Length: 115
Length: 112
Image (cartoon, rainbow over all chains, first blue to last red; front, side, top):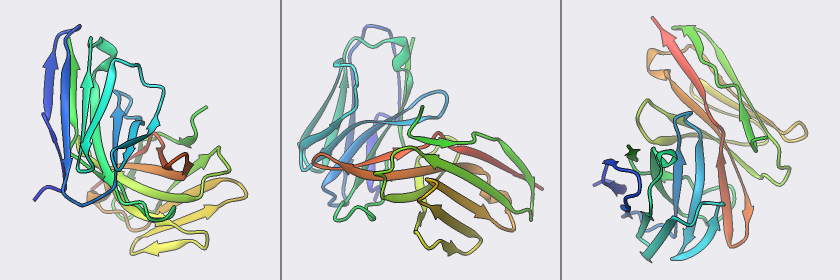
């Protein structure tokens, strides 16, 4: 059983389109994240949710809208896609009882290519 | 300036070599430290936590210097399978929870 699963794994689309990426975790974690990894491989946090509540929104354009229907799911919807949105988007989850714990478990990534 | 800085490499080393990676962080409020490993076209995975007293896990040794805001990872007796990108990670308080910040990674190639 995959702990953190995200779909689709690959997404190729035209500029201006709207697309969604879904993420589900079966680890019972309270916290979920979206990270973006660009062509330079820099992994940058976008959003973090704790028990369905948004706690981090890292100056991401408002074309990106996360939604957490329950604590096991965190979806990412992107409107009006731009070339610069091409990247690998990683979903992750963790259990955060203390500051020095809380390993992040990542999904396999969703590779988005905007043409 | 990025909050977590690493030498991007690549480091090209022969099998059996010892290699060391360094990392600096700029926010003195950072409280927890980790090394993650990312294989090509895969997701990052936790390699080890880094404790103030330094810690070892087999061939891997991690060190933390809070005064200098500096973290290191030493790999002894490198194996071909160690080829990957090593991500330095710091964690600190954030409103409502914690924030985990990744460095850009250091690429390692171990050759036969």
